[in-house]
Image 1: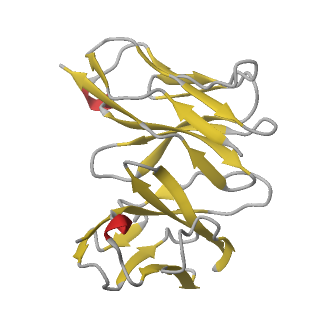
Image 2: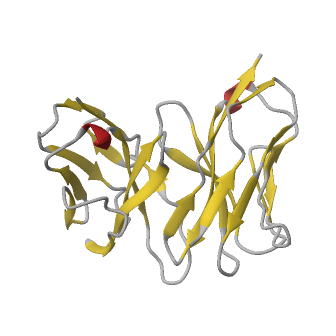
Image 3: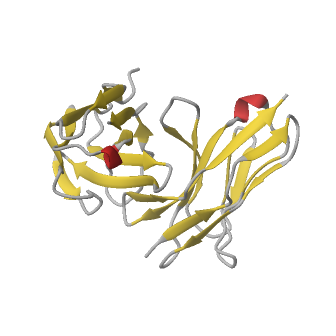
Length: 111
Length: 116
């Protein structure tokens, strides 16, 4: 079946550091891919998405490129801030509406 | 602009008791999803509804779990009887359904359930 694998956390960085959170997927065909973010005590929020190969999703300084050759959708940000501390989930769309999530990666940014 | 509303936010109960979690989707959204989040299993889809009709309940763990959506503005997830392994955060999400294309799911703040 379809699945998503994320790099294990937790990840701890200093402010202004470069961030990469790896995500790979296993799926039939080329599903839409997403990154969701969960801030402490809140539900998940959509951060960015890509619907086809080579698409780049971007939002709030975060980017991820849909790479079908490597079945990957790594999340990157050039300079992280303390406010980026959260749990990040990679997900794929199975069918029309079902999201399959990775395990989540907890990110902590120190000032 | 109210988002998805869940109640209660926290629930502590004893093993064997019935637990009912409630969700009010965003007005105008006609798809509703229930998820469970645990450290061991991550975020799992339990069931989802389109236009108040259950479409896929393959994620419901066992017969102790049931979900209903009696109208477009209310859904419940019931566990009877509850067990300690049901302890988790339960999220509700809603989205406007449109034919063929994916729409963003908006999540509620979750209900943290502890079964002693």
